[in-house]
Image (cartoon, rainbow, N blue to C red; front, side, top):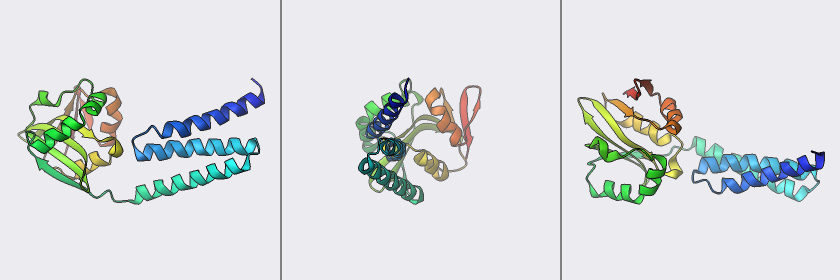
Length: 199
């Protein structure tokens, strides 16, 4: 493969990352992927001496980094609301997010744990996530721990752990492989196939 082909492939990679970033529902992921793509495309533009394109992409990198910095410093101002699982608001939220929940948790059915606890997290007036489970004797068997796409950065989970009633032991059985990094990041430990955390 000659040098000009490699340079062209480098440019296509930058373009592809910029395009893919706009398919992401998480604002943080969108900004990160867009930053990487814009940086690659800016370098490509310098190599082929397309200076207006390089300047525009370097500006995009700066804009993305500024937004990421602001998002990192920003207090998400979450609120926690304890509800009954059968309440209309909870059921309406579950219905409206049904397809996304099924995509995220293809083998998990919240109703299987016969939930008697529902905790919803709000950002302003917007629902950001929900925790459903069955609590008995200070142990909450988690049936569903779901965040909407815009808040899928562990911040909802971390807020829940800080604000749930105590003492409480959370048990999450049958965790899907793609959710193990999330559970580990929040401090859950695995014992006999069940992920647990004591609050």
